[in-house]
Length: 394
Image (cartoon, rainbow, N blue to C red; front, side, top):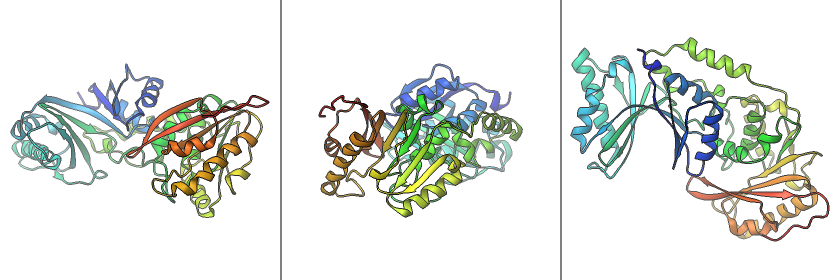
């Protein structure tokens, strides 16, 4: 049996607070019984399923296929179990592989040493069987990628079928200043009302758009565009038994499922001309520039079209870019903008500073937790009622 036809556990990793959105994605893709964990979602399938997940998942970081799980009380146990695995079914002796490791509560306190013992075990297996061994090193874009998860006496070896992390879609040619990570942007959009209104004439408006990550991810979702189509390389392409025609069939299916024309409008504005240049360049690289309207202006001058819509802002929050005292007026101005220009829409602010968020002066309908690297953040939702309904204070 080919490794690609073998069924086993699949772990799709993601940052904290994002498993519910990733779980919903896996359910929509038909994966069986996705189980949310602290930083990922567990399901079952084949390497063919892994290829499909790498193409379609928006909020996942890596797609890991479990090869083996065993007891390892120390580095010698780890080496022995790794050496016993039939690596000749995974890669050729003239190939290349890399190893990364995450360890905790083990006899070994250095993940690099644990990774080295895995490399030694693989190499020794090949030397024993073929009198030659694959080359190895840190380059994840070159060959097979192995991942060791070692906790206490339980070690699990995975194939990292992604290689480069999935947030690296390939469209960010001009990152500009402190850009939002692609998977985080996608999770914010999935958490909003945009998936409900995207195909029925609703609008997505992103004042303060920066390098355009939010509008690009919103456009990809509205078009049913698979984010993995933007990448040219995945680690599974180096596995023994990989058939490019089978992957091309998945690519063709994903392309056939795209709907490039969307009924509503997607509007991106920023006061910084360099940001708008970056946003346009990135949207071109993503293949979605045709459905995004770009304008350089203050966020308060952003056009808000009639009809249902999402307005999502990612302002500075004092951690990296802006001084907190200088941002007080900005957050107050966002609240005024919501009240005076955005009635009938749903407003969102992504921020890592809840103290500043109070300056918006509107009551939130939801406060959704997220993490931006090590910064605990919130996606704040505001129902911006049309008519005379009075907004309460937060």
